Image (cartoon, rainbow, N blue to C red):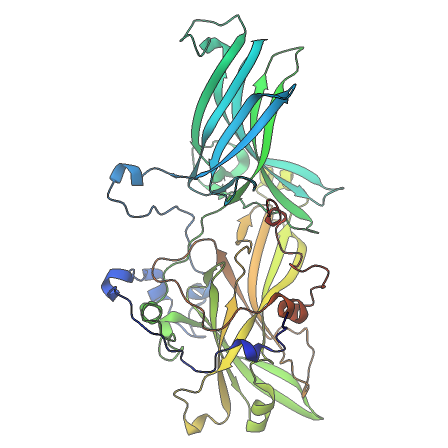
Length: 495
């Protein structure tokens, strides 16, 4: 296996890249309208503080266009069937069948916000069984500090399938049902996966509400979020009940606002997106920051200006377009320091949680969350910008960059007892000629991680994604952990 030694080899040699062929769509047909939020947020570093906050993003499911109005209004249903059984003497006497959007029946059932939990529950009873009721439920819980922490159930939604007051399902409705079930029974069910809970845990039909967090299961994590689906068979007092149980994976539907019209046009035409000077609406330009260090024995100061593509919300599995301008008083300092493999731009994640989860939910607590984990997950790939530079720009260098987001990256989360936050951080140049405190954060900008693409053309990366070996080397991940500790546990299920 070939190991790439530097980020420079990840970058194509010609900029902008050339493509054969053109899109058959016009801009009017493909480009969505640019939101008023983004059009107002045009400022560079001098923008109002209110406009420098993170962009608005939507938890609302947006149905795909359809000619069938009735069907387009229905929540989506998965196509993968999962089966779970209760067995007695090698006979499956109870079977739960559910549909989900998991890629394989061997994986855990998986649901995105707005999707429907649909399936059937089947009983095959060889003899009479005194069953009082049957219900199906979804529960969500947070576990903090496994081993010595606590478990808190924040979600418990139940749907009755049958009880004895409804009589024998195979014999029609009856005033009461004093007898026992015997034979073959099937109960279909369909309900939307819950996406929110009321604040305070009461009065569920009024707002405001908390969006529930995603399934969060990572090795060595101090907090985890679990969802489970149950079918409960009750037999009443002094008789044992029966239970079918399975874990399920929940993914919130988080969608960024559209990119700028010029950026969308570039993606549509397969061209290099415009730089911040050419598309000020499409970029958020951070305030300049000064990096201090030594070149030999000589003190050096370089001024760095980082720009990130708007909106500051990016879909996992895609890219974060970046632009970096570096200025110095001596051109030779720029020649020594500003190279594709010396720029250190990391995607940093911070996970915070409350240990007293139940108390937090009941009191609407705003006390500080406990920091559970801070980790750098990936880094930027850079290449120099040569086009359009003038002779007066001897004392500055401009670099294009992309940060490739893993497809299984946890989305951003802002739950009362759990917070998952992301930042783009710039650290001192990683050059043998530059002596500086390597862990010093020169620039930091919070961003959001989404789960679905924004309306409009999907951005295509220009650079190649760094290999796992290079990521491990640059980020200090042990070779014994090839995926890093940020990989969800359910990533391994069914592989």
